[in-house]
Image 1 (tube, rainbow, N blue to C red):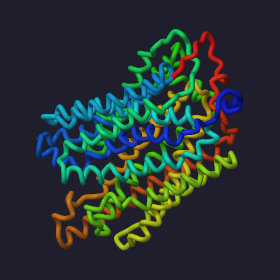
Image 2 (cartoon, one colour):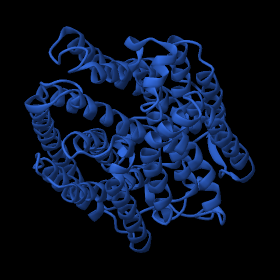
Image 3 (cartoon, rainbow, N blue to C red):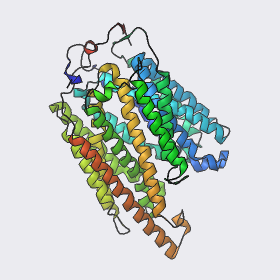
Image 4 (spheres, rainbow, N blue to C red):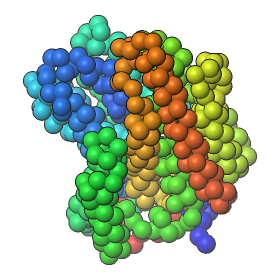
Length: 502
């Protein structure tokens, strides 16, 4: 079995000012994370202003769908062309769409502009992780893993908080306008400081248009099925079954096309070159599903059952996010110092499974302190697992495929989140039979509602624990191969090539 990390020679392992360079790149990643969550608290105000209550869900769904569909394309474009320029183009598209979202005169226009914004966000996520992969070799990645974990935690915690504060004090349109100054800083920062190593690529470039169309259709069918299942339509309805069948058929056709394409959108070699890549994909998908479920339903449980204030809902996840940040830093430092990493996805999946199992035991008498401890265990598990899975995936492919590999891992995490939300939402809906708002109920009716929410929480986190056990099984089979100490263009064996200076 060929180990991609065993080629040597070439360039300096890490640029001297890499922390400053990464800070600019991570600003773009922060924007994409914030905007995935920022509209949640602003939606009631948006509906009051623009109307279109029945279309409200598409403000979020349109964004996430466009992000998922465009992520593989942005990753491949970065591999084929100037990676820095492709990344900056995605930032510009995101900012233009943000301004249009802020100026939207109707709900339909806002949804359309959110789709365009999601297209840009796909490039922000795929480009940021690909640039990290190019700038920092896997062996050195742990030294900077805390930066990525901090930005991820800040995006997850800051989205709801920023959305609520900005909407209350400046109006919902500024939730989009505020992207502009941050994005401009990112563009100038990266334009000046970001120097991507030269790469070798073929003089003639072929775009895999058929593969793009098939994968876009498959992702769209999957995301729509996951979004509508258990809510808009029943899981066994012809709409959901039909979308599921369509996704499988299109995905099968995509695999056949990729085997014959000159420049495949997602080269089959990244999945077959080393088993660590597909195993990392399983880890990201399953852990992403568990993480999204936890961040979505834990605040609801704490508000309804434990009586926490909705105004402070963003802070309820602080134990989970803080533990994730600390664990990611510890894992990163140990990995860089020793080169050993297999223990962390195993420990991470085990922590997530244990934490989810403990969360499933919560009832109407569970204290907030106990909940915080259980949340911290889940957070530590995701901190050990998520960033490490990204590093393993990038170490399992050649440098010429780093964009496609980074886009794939980002896509798996997002699709896992979509599936997790769909499954957990269906479980919650089936378990909660009382009114939609406990604040509108009193006496026995409210007590019944609180009890139902506690029961729903039990089902959700028990299912999440089962997901985490699947991740643990995948982690056990990870092979601890040497991490690349350099990102050498000389190690890429690509014929008929020209050097592209980026």
